[in-house]
Image (cartoon, rainbow, N blue to C red; front, side, top):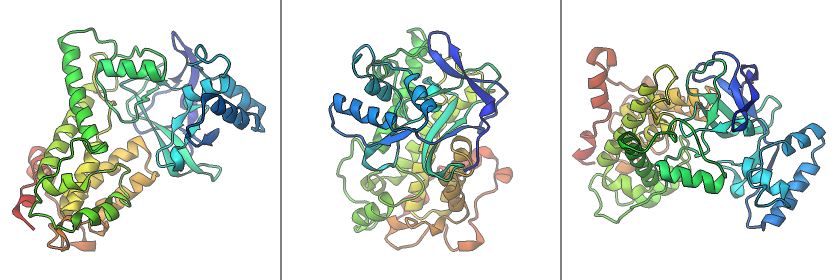
Length: 402
């Protein structure tokens, strides 16, 4: 992965926040702000907090660089009042981050990343790239990319929720219990009343979408759809859920089997809700009205829509959703990220994906017959954006049977 120009920001004291990261130059969305290797990685275990304190102490004391040891001790320690005799545990718990895709539920600590403060409507997006390579040639790096336009003097914030969304009271409780602080971002600063109630309702809708498709909640056994083969469940789980390369969320095959059109409609609702919030932000000065932009990334909806299109063998729509994921990943993860590269390949040849047409049990693959020649989709300039979106989110062909 390419190096990052960290001269665009610096660590400063922020009133009532300790230290934070502030832009020192104009920054455009998609700019990589940080690429950092972990100071250490440790497995998440059921050890007592005293044992964890000893483990972290050993990791820090073994560092050959005294400057790194000093930088660790200079980090925020939200739990020092509760555990004054366990300083290593307190600092680690305050600053460690779970490494998605790492074995044994590992967490890592990053010295520079730890200086970014939280906002429920962040201006930057962070991610652990397990397949990324640092300039030193080491595998696994954490990246931060701007998702809004930033001006010199603007604080650069990230979200601690990892693509989760929650209404006001739930966010307030979560941050108090896990991080021991109260957020004062524009969203959390909304006064009680109709506007905050409206924002909370939109967040509840997105949270329900997230819980349904990320956690697989409210799965019920329903009669099998004639659209998909009876052998689908085990085959789909093994080939698609376990090994699918576009994203790391686990989906329940039953939901796709029984109502693919309904799933696509829910994806559209979520995507439009997220994009509407982002449009409200405009030039990046948003947040004043408590917008929800940045709370959850629209790729989450596009990823599921892509999975659905692949699942039912719709090459044309799969190509478009893969391209949208590629464009989005380029902003949030970088054009050199594994996600952006894989999505780019999927946009060019969705039929090559191992899950393509899996839901049809080897039957007719809608939109196929094009192969390496490319996938034909409607010309948006010819039919207009509104008609293109109606075509993209239509699942009428999926309901015709296999």
